[in-house]
Image 1: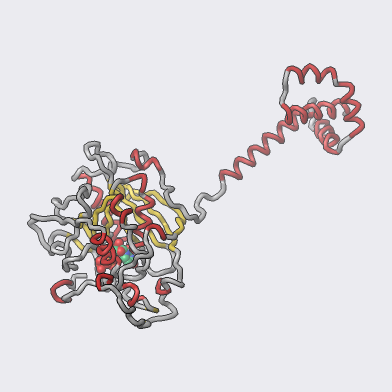
Image 2 (image 1 turned 135 degrees about the horizontal axis):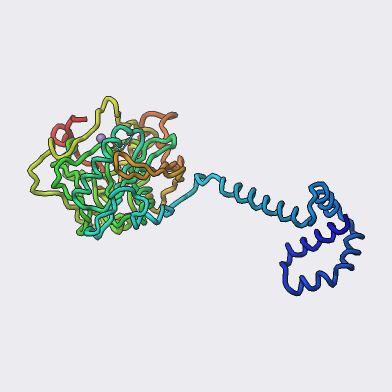
Length: 386
Ligand code: UDP
Ligand code: MN
């Protein structure tokens, strides 16, 4: 029994300080004095070890220590590796770096060495599954035919607030940082049918693919919604989009004001043989996909004006998790996000308590170019297709 206790003490010494030649030499030399010390201390622990060694007929109690040590490390490793990695966080700039090399992109979307650029297709998204199933494989093969390096990011809003297309695009920009040098803000329900529509790097400024003379529904001259290509540099320059637009509409008109104020030239496709009926397919049945036109609190008053306060730099959100999937050969990254709303600034992010407008007086000296609402001739500028 005593012999086991002595060995256990040596093992404890080795755990703490490691075995050296000096140690092993002195182990023998100190054997008898240690024996005496250990015997005197008679710790409960070494008694326990010795008893266990006796019970299991193990000659060296240190074998038991090793056994428990390895068990402990094993349990520790299993515990650490089973911690959930999907915790909510303010996860800016955390997207998988390997996207840059196309490492985990599945077939083909970044496999065009002749294209020096990389485009992130950003889809602001909520509850449009059928449209996505049609959109993803379609745009993937459309862009592969154009030999464009690209990757599809679906920014899925999973909170209970009203839909915020602009904030989702801001998130898409941040989350695709390592995967792109330009972005396409792309509605999920708009499919380019004319193969001549170019999705090239927007060298000379933003490029509006879904131009008013081609879009199936919106035809007013300052329209820049639907599909807009913009370099990361230009997007950052204007601080992205305003985060004040909850519900349908006007966020793209506010972006138009940002772009023109920054003196960026917006270009559009010319010389196409197709028009508003056959350039795009708009998969949008308005009876099923109702637009959220509700206004509450002072939403109307605030959102009709240029926002110089919010944008990329003030965006607050959490990434709940990320999922990689392939839809009929098209690699897609789904980013499930929770937006934050400061109800002191934009109470209309939730209209359940208060429907209807609170009219506020126009401030004296309000600059006329602060109003971003386009003047529309409903019959000429908006078609009733969806
Ligand atoms: N969207 C969405 N879920 C919604 C509302 C909008 O995913 O509940 C996205 C989707 O990408 C859609 C885009 O925002 O294509 C523009 O919205 P919508 O089609 O309603 O606008 P439209 O341009 O047809 O007026
Ligand atoms: Mn639509």
